[in-house]
Image 1 (cartoon, rainbow, N blue to C red):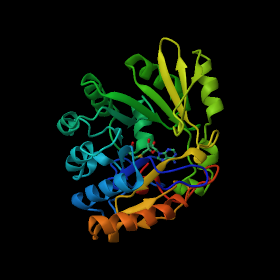
Image 2 (image 1 turned 90 degrees about the horizontal axis):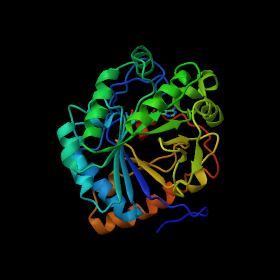
Image 3 (image 1 turned 30 degrees about the horizontal axis):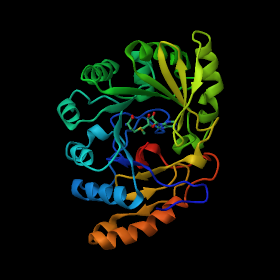
Image 4 (image 1 turned 90 degrees about the vertical axis):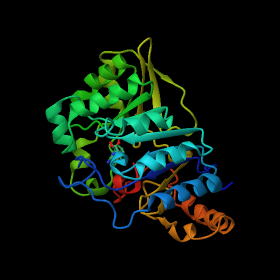
Length: 321
Ligand code: SAM
């Protein structure tokens, strides 16, 4: 087992299926242009082998499928059932929800138990302004479909001062009413946000989020697993919500995440653009691949930040948010 001086090891793997997305969210890309797939993206078979080797070599317990928009990728239909067969405690998916209905059969037949849907507003006009693509009703219908089928739903919202901070209360009310857990993600200073002042203008932190919620609800902080990125709160008799407080309460010192980009690079830290090519390893036999992968994982673990998120030019969609 590879462990660093903070006692961190890789436990959670995030696999980006594609860098392509059908949205162009204002906090993710600088202009209205949607991201395209990378020039070379791992074909399905190589991606499944890469994941399987990583699960073995790093001792991965939890896996999240992400992107880009994972449901856009033709690889999704084969990847999901393949990872469901792997010896993992938990498999989940992060999606913008636009294609849930189209992928309902694959999703429901896979045995997947939970899903995270990114949704920043319940206002259809604001939705278009932030996502610069997609359609709100389609997302809500998709969420309902999976919820009716028994999947556990978490909703991810990035609150931004100038774009959707007034949606914090309606979003929380919607989630509590339906039994979904809302996760507020503090805006991260990544990609184009590193230039100009959009980040400074829009950052809306944990304290302010809690202040707004406190106007209407009583809540208490609850325990979260050691390597959880979210600070969790309970609203008695109504439900829970969480805040992924990258800035306010950084979780770097207990981070167990490893990322595999759609074009075959390993990233040890969202806040570090250093990456390691896994493709040559995929050409080796199992024994050799495991040996090489161990030394690549040592390097990748050393890329983690010590204390707090420092921001990076990397775009979340490329390396898998
Ligand atoms: N397309 C999928 C989706 O929308 O969930 C998966 C990829 S998306 C990059 C994953 C998550 O990253 C989303 O919840 C999105 O809101 C979040 N995200 C992207 N850029 C961000 C930023 N600068 N700060 C905080 N969250 C960000």
